Length: 323
Image (tube, rainbow, N blue to C red; front, top):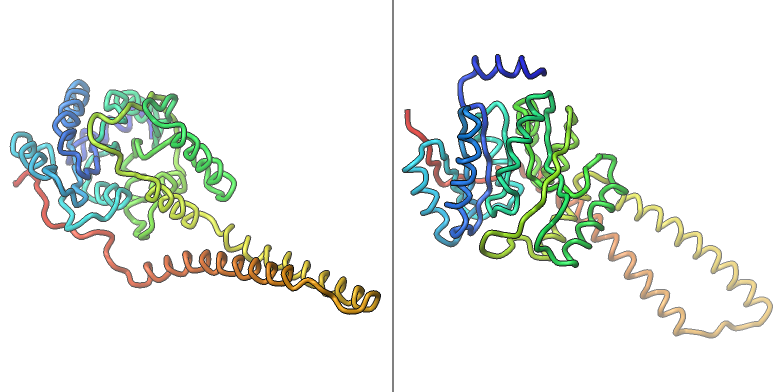
């Protein structure tokens, strides 16, 4: 779609031009600052916008702060979950509720600076349908976090057929056509940056420097990052299952070779000694079997979640402008 066609679309379609979607989980100290910076950026563009805040079961005063902001500014809509459903589900809910012709997903902790949004919108006006923010620098993050992130993106690139750009997060702009495609996908174990790459469309990058958190602590400790990585791999790759099959054939071949060697040694030297070696091999084989049973269980559990067809999230209430 050309920039000219987009301008015509803006004039003839109801609703705001832009929707800013931000998941919120225990960000009481940050939300007001986040809101002000987003408003300053969006008002400078001179077009209509809305801010959709998804309260993902916050246990601090985040909901009170968001309600106060909504009372002052009806352009801010607040969707409150009945409990914590997770960051990726909160993004999905934001896409469900966003009404704009394009949607910008951004975290509310201010690590992703709202001042990058105009550059993303400029790419969108030039014809891009997905504009993802790619990190040139990651300020304030530990070497361990940088190392694990690097390993994660390389692992994803090798295991999946989806081209997910390195050093990207969920900070991105999506055209309405892309949003509609993503909203139609209702799978429970969601890796949104993978889904936005999978749908295709014209995708471009904008480089930026990621900042330190404005306040508070990270909501992604190591165990959550590990769970997130498992969701990403199992959502877009069957390689772990194929690896189990391949490893099974390899071990079967080694076992047949071992039997042949044992027979030859028996004929040539009589009794074979070494029960400790046998016990170690049995324990090793048992461990391998349990690992791959776990891999199969991960995929089976995901099938079970999809078959139950429960809703992705439950909304307690929505604060929005009344007509």
